[in-house]
Image (cartoon, rainbow, N blue to C red; front, side, top):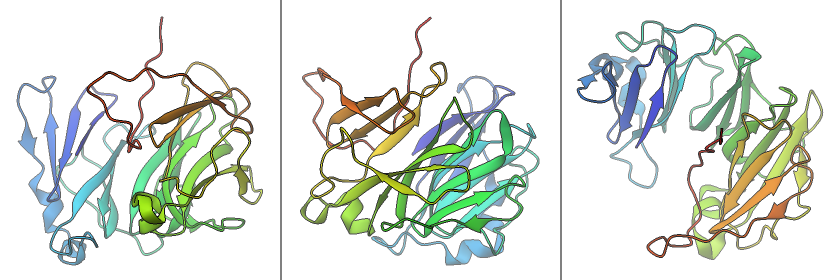
Length: 256
């Protein structure tokens, strides 16, 4: 389902059904981190469209503690390991149950941000406790979150009213929100398409250009040089084999 790289150089891969693998040699060989499935909450993990399944949705290597690893199970748990995946700590009661994306700013490494199907959650103690922050969010099914390079307290969050409104074209209705500090979430629309008919976007922040964000939905890509307040559609020429579908993830390749 995805890959993540830790500060130590270890690679992590996630799969469906839920399983985690680690490679110490650049992906030449892998070992399964089998103890993940021994957690007590594992018996309740279930992916709603296919109740018999579940998967590891997101992996976040910790910036504050190199051996700590945060892993989101869709759906059912946000868990972590303090020894690079050898053993695991189960979900805490205040944590989101359906995290789709985790984000952290390098200058604030113990503040974690979760875009989840059950709302937006934030932890200021590296995931030990969580707080649900939905003030201003009319749409609370959250998918993607990004943090401004210029200001670690400025966030963008992609949302929809439901999973169907997020991923199914016939009922699509999604919107981008912005928040700074302790302010309420506010919708962002200037330069972006009308929410009706739009499947849920993915957002990403530039790691070299302060205040620059990117957003993609329905095969279109947008760029903001104003910390997400205003957007401009980019003229993207897709490879002839690519289809203009909405993206489920985004990576920014910085030149230089």
